[in-house]
Image (tube, rainbow, N blue to C red; front, top):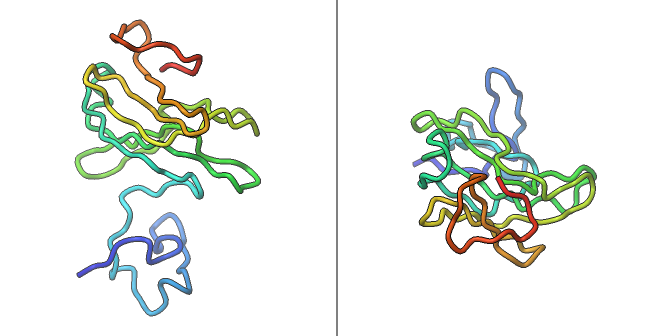
Length: 156
């Protein structure tokens, strides 16, 4: 039976990128002993919440794709994360990893820290932010969602 990530500090060699073994984790093992990650994420992004988008408010191209709430780094010289990322899938393969919503990090100014994302019954997204201490609804511009209100935070 294969073990799962994170046995290696970074993944094994591929055709395009050389990776290194984590000496305290992977010594004495081969890459084939493990199941590789479907999508590698940035270092220290702190991916805390993940959901498949199953709603119908956003365009169809987002349906059944993965949204990841990246809480963000706190101890990096160059901060990373503080955004919602979209992992596009083609069947069971990840084909891209790109920002879906951002703005919680402005230069070195942290304005929010996304924790989780939920798909609401009307197809909008609810993003919790533990820096602001609130959950912020996100919906397509021009689409009115019953009960949602602007909290002065970005809208998609």
